[in-house]
Length: 309
Image: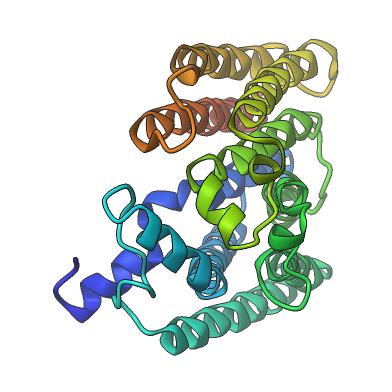
């Protein structure tokens, strides 16, 4: 348990989960470099991403506090301490901090759009924030009604990369945007996989996810199929999108497929309540997504900014 107030807030911010939004930030910004590199757009994007992250993690803990408490009672030794149920921070402080981060993120979107001449940036920022609100907060709470995984795919896999591409280059669907299809499929895989470790507690708490509806085995099979299809979509983008050279899609696909293989090797052991094996299984999936997307981002930046004359 964190022993100082600062460490409590750092723990609540969940820095280990930050790549889930930092990767779409980098990927979208890389797509936007078709029009050159704007350091101002990079700075605005980084500020929005950090505030969006805090908005999501704080309000997600607030929205899931009852289900988190159920999981801690069911598996006191099978999961890490939860911010609200374990008394790390009170619920009202997380609520106010999350709402404050969301307001600041929206202000960054509108102010950054005015500064950089991106007239739709503020609206896009509100859209990204609104997707999370619909995901986890009342009255919509799609993550409790079913459909939360699809909304997460649209938010993390499509809306964030397109927003950052627009911020950096002025076009939400720039050259190379075909790579987003694979990224979105992998985002859906990640969204489904996140429910594996919460299957029984989510079911008891009334949360309707893919895994609570269809079970652990079906969840793993869906994750594996989507991750494989996402890597294939990257390869196809490289082969058939004339706006980018083939290696920009093929190399990330190879990186991702290597980790998909590692994930498949772990699959049989990642059964219900096998929290340690599920952790390794999801780590391989995250490496497939994050390192594959990082490879695509570096290749895009290199290709777009390499001097041609």
